[in-house]
Amino acid sequence: MSLLVVGLSHRSAPVSVLERASLSADARAKLLHDTLAAEPAAEGAVLATCNRIELYADVDKFHAGVAELSTLLAQHSGVGLEELTPYLYVHYEDRAVHHLFSVACGLDSMVVGEGQILGQIKDALAVGQDLHTAGRLLNDLFQQALRVGKRAHSETGIDRAGQSLVTFGLQQLAGVAEADGTAAWAGGKRALVIGAGSMSSLAAATLARAGVAEIVIANRTAARADRLVEILTEPGGTGVAARAVEMVAVGDELTRADIVVSCTGATGLVLTGDEIEAALHGRTEPLHLLDLAMPRDIDAAAHRMPGVRLVDIESLAEASADAPMAGDVDQVRTIVSDEVAAFGAAQRAAHITPTVVALRAMAADVVAGEVARLEGRLPGLDEKQRAEITQTVRRVVDKLLHAPTVRVKQLASEPGGAGYADALRTLFDLDPETVASVSRADLNDGDVKNRGRV
Image (spheres, one colour):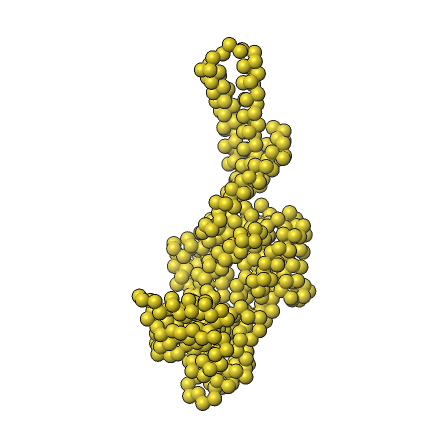
């Protein structure tokens, strides 16, 4: 296993750099394509959220891989390599596994314990599968990361250590520390949600639960806005009044809204300073703005406007630095460490499996050859005798191979056990191409079985 991750996050880079380095969906696809086209990488996946950009790859060489992945991130993000390099972090092999598992559990999130990252990891895997850039290693890694994250949330109280970025942002906007305080603050207000993606949908649902009087959804794709309105107003749902509008109507809606949450994939500002100032004319109530987009949707000039309260990713990063961490975090860290060890052992054991399969195939060929030779020497054998002799020879070979193959799998699963596969191939003079063909078949089967599984 030669897993490498190169990335940057709110922990390593200022928000201003993260904002400039953010990747559109097209840019992520091109990055993955170029990653596989690069010589050091055999697989690739991109995990991009509002506060992290990470490129995962299966590489042949560490130093060449780091150089190549760093260069690719710089090229596709538009931030120069010299400027980007000081903010990049690198994790390799077990440390890379530990990093992703920690991310999946919410330990590396801006709000510790938030669960949205699981959906983002699932999306990253789906993109890698759709583009055929995620092979056996990254499929196994991301599938297991999802399981580890779910285990952390089900077996510990990590949810008490933090909330979703939406909930945390609304609490900061309201100036309260608890969710019930947000509900008291938001009750009866009008809300405008710009965007209809997963974060915007979560924001709309959170606002509905908080008791806002009305939610207006604005999105560039009208069908997605309409669908979100249907979900909010369907029988047995939140019961909130909701309607969809076109993006051109955002200026008018801004004059009536009390709370605005924006999270789009736009590369430029969605709400400019001039538009916000225009919406302030004649207002008697303050305007509350929550910008969850990266790069930002709302002009930072709003921070300096009287009657406006703006919370964005940068201010959330500052606020989260002082957030308390529950004791359950230590329990999650233990889960992560145990799961990293188990994943490493499983990967090392899987590495020797093609060699063991090739050895048994060679033994089967030897048995078949000897049985055929025996039939030539003893043509008078009846069918029952021939079958009994064949079965006896097979049992002898199986018994001779059983203990060594079981033991070599056990040894291979331990740290430093990768050399046992090479030793087995050398001792039995196994054809490297035969072993490679077993590996390719196993990879193809794994891709089919893992497709869409979480």
